[in-house]
Length: 244
Image (tube, rainbow, N blue to C red; front, side, top):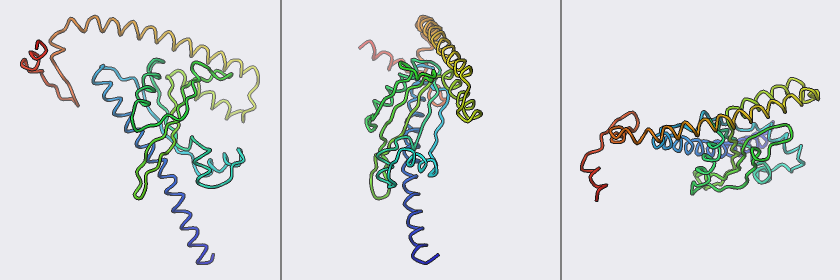
């Protein structure tokens, strides 16, 4: 390999490294936002709407395959323009209402821009797949410039995530040639998961109403404040300000 081609390879490696780092930093930024929202919600409502999160970056090989599949010319600008799911964040929630609550909190972040919404909960895919998909632009501050980077956010319940995971494994096992009988059963399983989500949502709502009714009975508990495992008693002088 000539000295020139080595230099070119080094330059290309640096370019693709910075390109992938942009998406990694965008994911880091978004995950931090979700953690802050999660912690704030827990303190204010004594309840955690997020079960867990999982992030991923497409590999350069996977990006290249998608370019070929879509007939998109190879360039960094073309990739950014046509492929919006290089960075992905999956948020798994307890209940359906949590999905839309988390989505609303994210969209209300002033520095995030909502690019696209696909609601597969209100409009499930024919195979039964349910999830809420958002494409958001995240500002990333590099050493020499600011970049607005797209991240795909998938928000779903535990039941939706469980079904999607198993459906993916079945497709992988059969190399996507799944027998019609199994496709029908997968659709039935998706409908069962949806019915479970609806039932659990109702139970959750009723339990929350009971908690709210009982919360007003314990005045002493309302005088206590807990942040980061530290408990504080609200001073009487501060409480007296409410009378004013």
